[in-house]
Image (cartoon, rainbow, N blue to C red; front, side, top):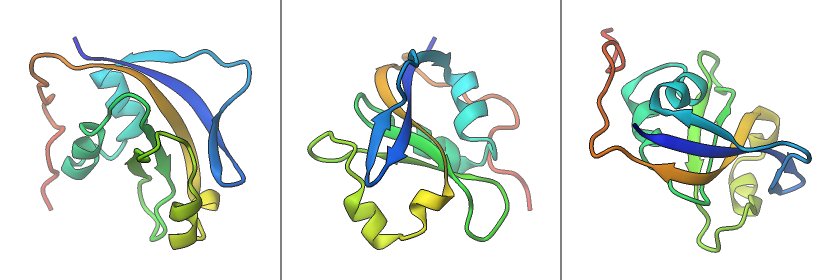
Length: 122
């Protein structure tokens, strides 16, 4: 079974930093999708498939309203510096809902989509 270890973080100035006195949480694929891809659309699930150790994953408010949008961020230097992201999107900090640093990723030999997790018909 796929397993993900996530360290809760917060935004401090232009940096993503771990929240003091919190322990990493361990979730499986189903729990990860429920927490970080609440819309269950194909794009949100594809974003989660990009997870790797030392990346950051989270949710932001959708600027157009509607369901939150998830993201995965991996800086070349593996730091939590968001200076470039915030320079491009001044509202990122205000829209940030939740963010985690990925401590460990264990993928199954195959990831199976659960019924109803594919694209929703229009």
